[in-house]
Image (cartoon, rainbow, N blue to C red; front, side, top):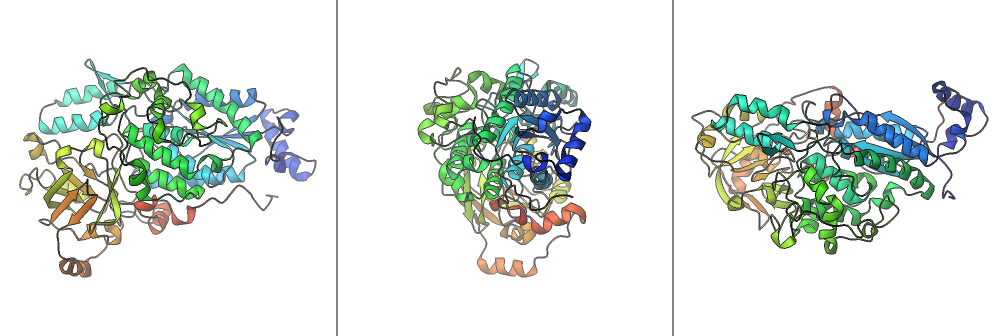
Length: 573
Ligand code: FES
């Protein structure tokens, strides 16, 4: 095929001068023949493999399939490692490192001789960090997800990553599950390679990537151990080479219309609240004007038809057998822009032509949706001037309009020290308020917003209360939880001024979050407000705290926003 643009890699590997000698000669120490440098597309394979990231620890054989695909298509595959943000192990929170990883990805892509990129992602933050970094470079780029674990199986029932951890741990705290049973569930939950198999953040972000058009169709739902995942890896490698020949760069796929589609799909799948900050950040990198209010506008009135935990009852393996994301797209095709271009070189509409829903209990008919108004509700008011979000499909309908007395935790340590105090003055009608867990406050905006309820209320049978914070929550979590309150408490947002005994009004239908305290009293409190001392100082954390944007802007570092392209003005020698 005729190539549309000259190969970028030939600026390194082409020619006969000293520099070309250096670039080729050192590469040849791996036994490469001369013809690998003859002007074939070099495909960088950006691998987030790490044994500290168990969700991505199965990537070694998968990357070999990608390489085969690149070779099949006449390309030259070169794998490179990048920072791997593993959700289950990284402290204080993987989110603190999403932006750092994205910088690693961006600089590795720009600085090296590659013409196209395959991104290999899996665990929650690996997908957005790779897309953010790649979007700032804008080469032909395609993403391959690692796939979810098989369904958890425990005593005859399916159990889901995260979602059942939260349930079981509350059952133990409430005294209705034994410690021994809790321990037994551990191995039953994670019984194959892959990422969380609920519609948590990893599955959501894989679905968002597919909805944005940056993966091959079917990418999100094949289980990690399904042979079709390996097949998809090979096809992804082949497609990366073709994309270079077609000059199909990321910016041609990541358009505002593609983001609108993804936001609508997030409503349909009952996707994670974390997708909000991640899509805002990715859009910022590619130069698409996307705002928090777009989440409400595009996502409002989208029925949640994917019956997966935490909103519903099934798991990703079931979604795969039902037809996966293409079948979900087909079910809401009238709500999507089917004309957008995708990495297949075809439109979204062409990609989903002829797909079927094989299980209407997993992908529900629209008139049987879990909720008719899925998506994210963006709340505003004097408690969240720059917005806060709630996921209605995961909340209790009876709490969606609620006025309650605030019980305030100044930070996560205060919460942990106080929540199970038998003398804590709290009942089921109260609103739990957690401060200083936002981007700057924690730092890194940890997933602590779905704070566990006080033990004494759990023992009374209470299973949900209104909770408000500047934190995030796990995509696997559920409850009437208001998140991402902006500005956060650590920068003096109104959340910082809430005191025990204040009354707060939540009105999800009216999109309102109101602190029922007079302006005069708030001004008095503001004059006395003092920021907390940072929990961590020095190193990357200090840079992060100094430069991180608020949640409504995607919590990127301010100097990373934007597309800087892939040109490098200087040679290395
Ligand atoms: Fe990695 Fe859930 S912990 S996907």
